Length: 214
Image (tube, rainbow, N blue to C red):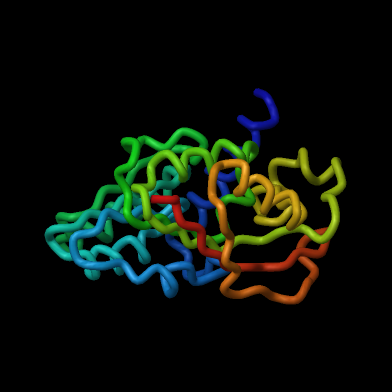
C-alpha cells in the first residue's frame, strides 16, 4: 500500500477502536459557531460517534437534513446505532474520505468539522470539495490544528503519528493559502490557542469560519 492508504488504514483502526470509549476525540467546538437553522442541510466532516450530527438534526428539524461523514468503520457503526436508538429520521451517516465527498454540488447550507482535516493527505482537495458542495452563501466552521514550523518528514510519513492527530498538520500560512486557493475570499478566525506540545512537535488549535460567495 502507498502512504495514503497506510494512513487511511491507521486512522480507521485507531478511531474504530475508540468508537465505544469515553475519551474526548475533538480539538474544538465548531458546532457552537454554526447556528444551524430549521430546514437547513448540514454536514459534519469527521463526524465520529455522531453527537454533533444529532445536535444539528434537532436544530434543523424535520424539514432539514444532516449528513455525518467519517472514514472509520467503527465510528459509522456507532453513530448509526445512536441515531437508530433515538429514532432520528433526518440524518445519514456515510463512510467516505473527505477528498471526494458523496454530496451534490451546491447542496449544503452548513459544514462543520472538528480536528479532522489535519489527518487528510490532500487538504486542497478537501477544501475544493467544501467549496463545491456548499450553496452560494453557505458557511463552513472548522476547528483544527496547525503546526509550528514544518513537521519533520519522519513523522509526516508515519501513519500512526498522523492518525494521532498531529503529524498531518501543516503551518498556518500554508493552511490559509489552501483555503484561499479553493475560492474562499475571507477567513475569519473565531478562536485560537497559544502553541502547545503534541506528539514530537508544537501545534496550535484554531476555529475559523469561511463562506462561499453568493
